[in-house]
Amino acid sequence: MATIRKKSQNTEIAQKILGLIDLTSLNANDTKENIKNLCESAVTANGCVPAICIYSHFVPIAVKLLKKSDIKIATVTNFPHGMPDIELALFETKLAIERGSDEVDIVLPYHQIINGKTNLAGKMIKKAKKICGKKTLKVIIESGELKTSKLIEEASIISIENGADFIKTSTGKVATNATLEATEIMLQVIKQHGGECGFKAAGGVKTVAQAAKYLELTQKILGESYINSHTFRFGASSLLNDVLNILNGTTHKTSASGY
Image (cartoon, rainbow, N blue to C red; front, side):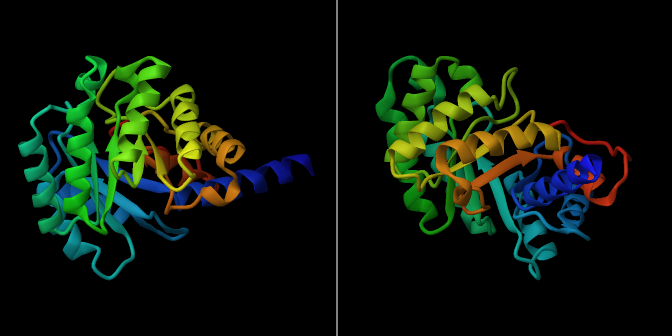
C-alpha cells in the first residue's frame, strides 16, 4: 500500500512539474530540425509545457509550429555573458519581440554587480521592460557567478525594483547553476517585495526528485498558490524526460543537452 501511495505521489508531482517547464534548447549547434523536434516534444500525451526557450533567430519557426497551442515562446538576450553593452542588449530584446517572442530572458550585467556598479544593471532592466511591455521579462542574475548571498540578494532586488516579471537563477552555461541555497535567497527577496515577481530555476535540475525540492522550498516561503506557470518555472531540457518516464511508467532515457 505504501508503495502504491508513493507511486501516486510521484505521479502527482511529475504532472505538476510538467506544467512548469520552460523546455529549453540553447546549444551552439541547434538547427531548424532540432527546434522542430523541441516544439513537438513540448506537446505530450500528458499535457503541454507552458513554454519553450530557444535562440532568437529560431523564434519565427517556433511561432509557426506552435500557433495552434497555448505554449509561450521565450528567447534569451545579452546571453550568456551578461555584457554591460546596454544598446546591444536592448537591440536584441527589441528584435526578439519583433520576431514574435512572448517572453524574454535577459542576462543581467552581473559582472557590474560584482564590481559594485549597480546603476547600469538597473538601467538595462528598466529599459528592457519598457521594450517588452506586457510581454514577460525574466532577468537571469547568474547566481552561481555572484556566489555570495549578499550579491545574489542585491541582484534580485535590482531586477525586481526595475521591472522584472521573473528573476531566474542561471544561464546554464557556467560551472554553478541553480542551487537551493541561491533559490532560498531569491525567493525571500520576492516575498519581501510582495510575492508578485516570478521565479525560474534554470540549469542542472534534471530529475523530478531534484525539482520536488525546489517546489517544497517555494511552498514553504511563498505558499502553494505561488507554484503555477505564471510565477514559477523550471528552465530545463532533460527534466521533461524524467517527468514523462514517471507519468508513463517507463525507464527509457532519451538524449538531452543537459540544461
